[in-house]
Length: 157
Image (cartoon, rainbow, N blue to C red; front, side, top):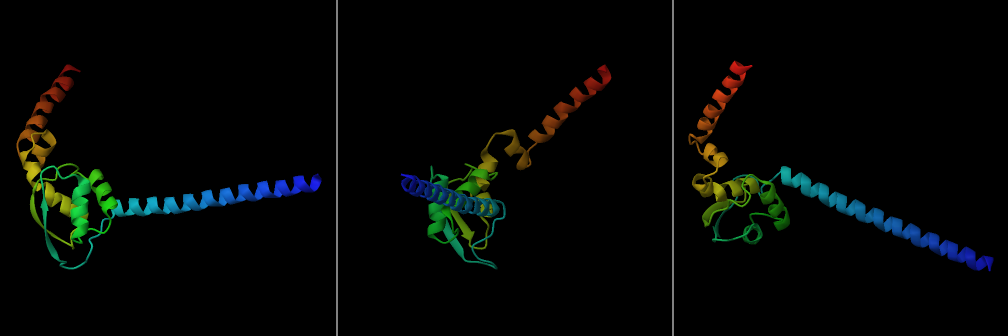
């Protein structure tokens, strides 16, 4: 009976050790993958250096970031569709891609491509942040409105 308990104990220990090793390998693999994605999201590099190759891409009405990523990957402008979708989601141009035909280069970073594809929408939106970026007076009007409030606080206090 004690031999049986000893063998079952060894088997139990071996299974637990194997489980721990598998968990450690999975954590190592996915933490490395997460690090690489994080690094490449914020340290964007073009597909090629120098002048690159110019490619014409057409974005249709209603194209999602996933569809745009598929189009860019199919013509060699990006290497990782999932990475591009994350970069688009975290960029200042999230959801601002406008329909049209664009001349993009393999020497451009994904951020530069998104900026070009969003160029038309920055001029047509009515939000204060976008209007301030394209040089309209809404930003100066809002700062003028804020000045009297500050003066009233200092005069009243």
